[in-house]
Image (spheres, rainbow, N blue to C red):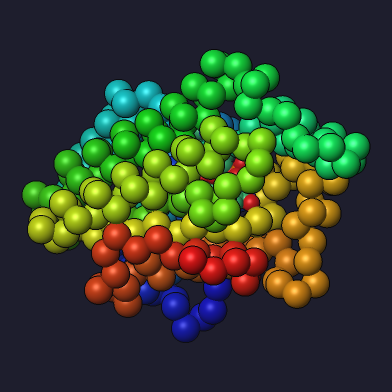
Length: 264
Ligand SMILES: NC(=O)c1ccc[n+]([C@@H]2O[C@H](COP(=O)([O-])OP(=O)(O)OC[C@H]3O[C@@H](n4cnc5c(N)ncnc54)[C@H](O)[C@@H]3O)[C@@H](O)[C@H]2O)c1
């Protein structure tokens, strides 16, 4: 995060989901360092409490984004305290470590992965309720509180896997493709009310989620012709750009940040 961006979010009120780890935590750090008042929201309460102790102007909020009443309450609290919300970055999301294990085992055995037939309803629902339903809850709340002020910037964190769908990871790919389309539809509606919605779609990024990726699978991502795993800060920088006034003419964009692995 370069010094040239110090103060870019001075006086702005921001809410970041998934702020307890990885990309969301890096976004919260960046926003706080650049002057914003940050509501750091995560289902992992102790993680955001620890972050808030370390950062200035940062308030922890325990929220499960899959629970609409909890999301609405968090947004209402931010507005009650500050009168408005200027920036929302929605980074909360889940992977499926079991499916990743199955893919890795197949890779090691040099067999095709067999996942879909074994994927239980609970595994499917868990990914969809957090990644897709959660995004709907966050976008709905953001538009509700931002539109009356005729301003605001929302950034959702999608995934490159919506474009390059990995075999054996259908629920995650579907949830992320759904969030891209959801974000774009809301973007086209919300811009009429001065609210910008955009998405960053990261490729492999070094976070808690990546730490749950088996070594065999990680090796599959190692390619000397492209950039290595991104840092959480590198993805946060893209999210912060989308949230900033520099991106004023970006609406409904899905910015692929994957270090050159593929293009769309
Ligand atoms: N790491 C990658 O390689 C990668 C690649 C593409 C996209 N992404 C996406 O980036 C986003 C951030 O992931 P990350 O890599 O930083 O992972 P991470 O696991 O390090 O952080 C995710 C955070 O979201 C929180 N969270 C999970 N479920 C939640 C819920 N129901 N309500 C509120 N918070 C919840 C977790 O507690 C955690 O703090 C996710 O949406 C993920 O799908 C990650």
